[in-house]
Length: 128
Picture 1 (cartoon, rainbow, N blue to C red):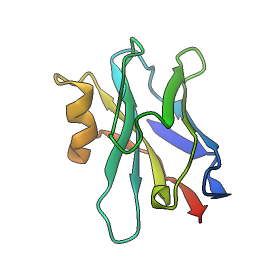
Picture 2 (cartoon, one colour):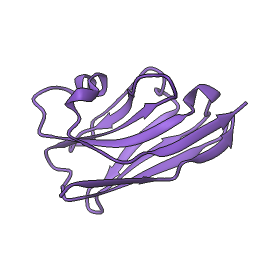
Picture 3 (cartoon, rainbow, N blue to C red):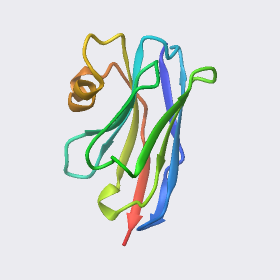
Picture 4 (cartoon, rainbow, N blue to C red):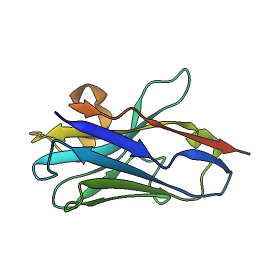
């Protein structure tokens, strides 16, 4: 049984930093795309950052240059380092995984319907 559990969310002021973590069980990162998605109130869920088993990364435009996705394959851990946070980054952040996709990371980020597994989410709130 696949389980993804996020942690590290919280409330910060604009310009602050947070590091989200996701521990995965029931899968190994080989042959999986792993990613972070977010959903703000009243908005659709959107991709933030993704990484494949080789360590190749892809970011949404809103995250590029401020967020860094990484993973520890041995520990089955996924991370999202977020810097220079803005109020518009306020959302529930979800860890996500998809097994052996026949498409690229960009497609994975753009299509939430292709995500195979979701975590329960961790709230990030950025105040101005």
